[in-house]
Length: 305
Image (cartoon, rainbow, N blue to C red):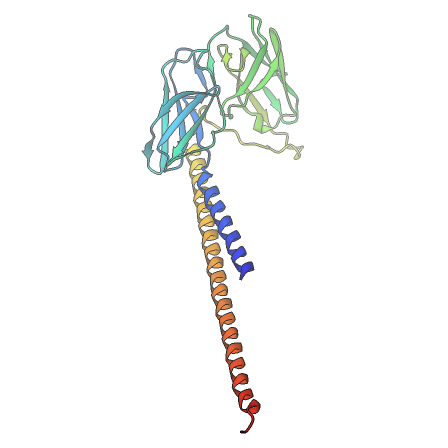
């Protein structure tokens, strides 16, 4: 009986820890900006944060400090909070994260969003060598030059995620690319900067055309070219819905685990009751047996008068 009670105690502790862990697991929100992560100086920016449908409050953090708070709005299945920056300046450019509250719990922070202010310095010039029309397999270099001395340059391809290439230099840097494939086709611009979040005016666009070399089949495209210059809200929504579906699946799995644990506890209780019933039955049988033997001994031990 002692071992059974000990097992029940451990099962109860494990069950309570599982429930506590489940309550503390909130999927992190998704954060993005409109019209883009690059905002010209003086223009407004919108930052969106999307959590689970149960979210009741959102907080936006800028460089690790609380910046804004907002209540969410429902857009179908989506629970989104919108934060408005009236005019972008170097003081509002930087790294943003958001969190949300569901019931009494706060989620983990979102992935960082690096918001950049542009049009602060002169306009750089961008050129490509050997030229804007090349064949797959060739090596290509982009050259970004800025009249005003700076210390960092960025090269962006339109339609790509906001992870631009960067090089350090004073007035000119080289961005080597290659061997190129048709996946490198697209329009490129460059910027000069003194830090990661304050950039110059964009250069004039340079369009790179890459024709396939049909004699070489080893240089197949390795990525797809996007035709959008901005974040795709539908793509973000799909990712958020996937996370929410995954969270729902996790809750279902955890509920199933609780049911299994409850079943094990019930089995343990039944075993405990059965053990107690058998112990009582054996004790009763022993008592009845002892009583019968005592009754048989009494006539044999009596002597005639």
